[in-house]
Image 1 (cartoon, rainbow, N blue to C red):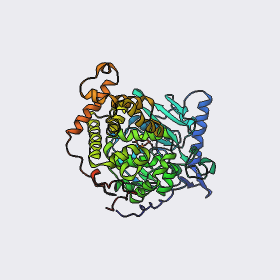
Image 2 (cartoon, rainbow, N blue to C red):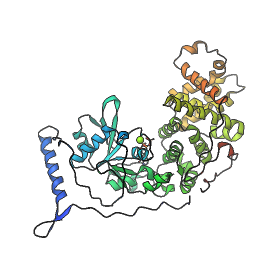
Image 3 (cartoon, helix red, strand yellow):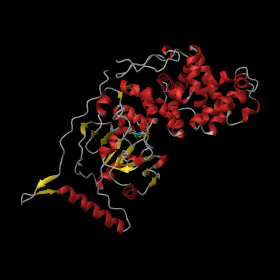
Image 4 (cartoon, protein in one colour):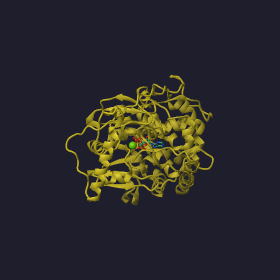
Length: 466
Ligand code: ATP
Ligand code: MG
């Protein structure tokens, strides 16, 4: 695939609800209708009750947009669309707001996957949305969202359209780093503030079509990860997007466009500027994704791991044997996730990730606990690893030789014991493991096997063009 930016969709013609009145003047019927709906809502609020729900499905006017999207008729499988999310969308539309499925759920549905959650975007302001759903609450101080709550803990996150910060005050000093991201906007502004084109698509449930302001549909078709706008700018604005690119590439088996790959390599050190809890959270998501092996390998290959976990990067680069051990363990983590249908406990995941270099650091030390602490302290500082997890990782690794020899002693009665046993089981599975997964080839880029990486070669090259 070439390095050219994907072609942007041609804008479609604006639709209008205007029609001509008897005296030949244009009358905007839509405004009148929306005004009526607003008056009804206000009247209902004054009466202290929810506005009546129209029975049956009401055909609403199509919205008009200041910037028209490319539209794609798409018949998504209704069985895969959460009925409660659909209910929320329809009620918002009935009350005169624009409302769409957005982000990861649209991407996953288009890729034929079952979304893990459903997010909505709407023109309704948080208070207005809140007033439409008794089972809802407003969350967030920086940016207010509405959580509409359903049974079994289901949450449909409903966000008001917002736009990217443009003011100097929304950014950090003279850098591009975004500190505030909380200005309401319109649908097209909400689309372009998102990170990747595949995450910037809106699904219009009523008219069964995808609205695309960002060129996401062509990227879905070619299974390519492309930032919305210049990748260097977007990664400098929010370096955590680098980890998100790696996650989507690994988890969804997509290719990274070569210019995006280059930008990851170029911008990797800005990850040091990101909020540390977000780094921990995103790394944990990589481990939970069912594609931990590919995620961490890609992080290693791009040099991202040298920034976030230099201890592990150095261990991987030291010898082929080391690297194979780590990759096998991570493959076992993925296999276990696939078999169980859910990821292991975070403590198990982090222990599996750090086990080999930590064992190496503890080898030959009389006080293994002290060696484990020395290893973990800088990691905890850099990534804000919660003490609950770092303490557990430390204890499991320090006790590993005794546990493997079946001498758990009193530790066997602690809640940590089953997690330690899980790590040992993964280790055994990795040692007797089947060959490493085959290299993955994708539409937009090619990945080689972990074993083919150069030793400590910097900077790493972008993916060969495929
Ligand atoms: P997942 O399936 O892992 O939840 P997701 O794409 O839904 O993937 P979320 O973190 O749930 O990821 O975010 C929802 C949407 O919000 C994304 O699809 C994207 O459009 C937008 N988004 C999330 N994080 C960022 C970010 N750092 N910068 C810009 N947009 C973002
Ligand atoms: Mg999501």
